[in-house]
Structures are given as C-alpha cells and as structure tokens.
Image 1 (cartoon, rainbow, N blue to C red):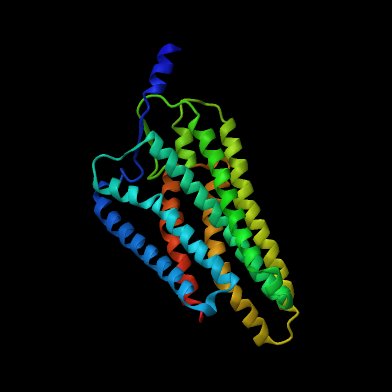
Image 2: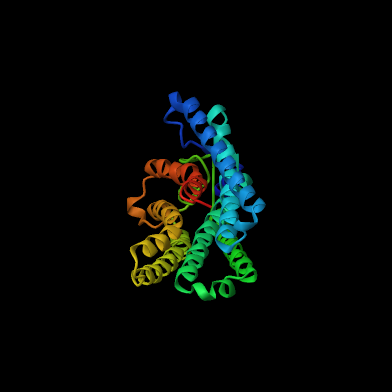
Length: 298
C-alpha cells in the first residue's frame, strides 16, 4: 500500500501521444492546424469587430453571435497552441496542473457554447413566433442574463467535472492517447477500475449537451409551426433564412459533441475519438464565422 501511494505521488506530468502514430505527418499536420487556427482567430475577431463597429448590428442575435465568437476563440486557445507545440517538438508532455487547467477551460467554454447556441435558438423563436413582443422579451437585460447564465453554468459544471477527474489516483508515467486532456482519455489513464466517475461525467455531459439540444429542438418546433402558418412562400423563405445559419452551426456542433460524449463506453475508440476531436476542436470553431458571414446579407 505504501509503495502504491509513493508511486501515485510521483505523477507530475502526462505524455500526449495523440498524433505519435503519424511521425511523417507531423509537419503537414502542424501547417494545416496552424493555418486553420489563424483563420479561426481572424474570422472570429473580424466578426466581433464588425458587430461592435456597426450600430445596425446591435441587436440580440448579433450580440449572442459576438459572445459566441469570443467563447470559440478562447475555446481553441485552450487546446490548439499546446497541440501545435507538441507537433514540432520531441517533448510532448503536459504537467498535471496544466492538464487540469486545460480540461477546465475546454469543458467550460464548450458547455458555454452549447448554452449560447440554445439562447440564440430562443432568440430566433421569439423573433419569429412573437415579433410584436420581440423588443420587450429580448431586451438588453434579458440578453445579458442569458449570457451570464450560460457562462456560470458552463464553468460550474466544468469545475465539478475537473475536480472529480483529477482526484482519481494516478501512478507512474502516464500516457494520454489524445492530443489534449479530454475527459475519457484522462479517466482511462487513472490507476483505478472504478467506473463510478464515468457515470457522473456522463450525466453532466447529458445535462449540458442533450439538455441544450432538446431546448433548441423545442425552439425549432415552435418556429416551424409558425412558419407553416405564413401564407406566402416568399414569407416562409424569408422567415426560415433568418434561422439557416444558426441551424447549420447547431447540427455540426451538437452532432460532433453527441458522437464523442453521449456514447456508451462499449463503443469507445480513443483512436477514432482523436480524429473526431480534430473536427470538433479545430474545424467546427472555423465554421461559426464562415457560416454567419457567407449566409448573412447584413
């Protein structure tokens, strides 16, 4: 028992081996991820700047969009810089504390993004279903409260998840079969077979991901019901066009999140999860500014 405790206290860092199976692709992957990261930051910063500068964009939909762009930028900053460093260096380690901090911000901003998309769905629902009451129901105070709720809830759940995971026993030199400190790979690196923590994490993920998606689904049921009552085809197309960008981002965002985090343990594959996570952490954040700029005449 004493030897086990001594080994447990020696864990000071983890080794991230997510792309170690592709040594010949390290430089091409670095170039691809670096350019994608630059495009993501540039797109989101431009989106936030345009919304800030142009007063006709100072409406709830674009307020939520600017907050989402900021959150997405922070979300990628928590993951991609460290991944880029690991791709071009022999040392692919991350400290125990650094891993915990990375997971905290990754889950926090990820959960915040889910709930921001929910708030944006509610905004579109009010705009289409209650247009005469829109300015009253979506005033500045309500918008700020929705953003505050999304942020506080996302980071509170993140703190709980991170605390539970990093109180698990870790012993010896531990490799994480991923390119960042995601939940499932870190849990599998622990020196315990107790799966109770995985159930707790699964419940929290279900609350954030599935709960947010159900609320968005409810918003769109009400939206489509209202659109079907519009007599003219032109009016229907105009109403639906205001939701098309948001709906596109929701499908991709929640599709990736559901595949990764809402599956039973029996179908886990860390190798496949690494490839899926590239889409979720690198490609999807770029989708936000691209979709909202190309599909939006404003």
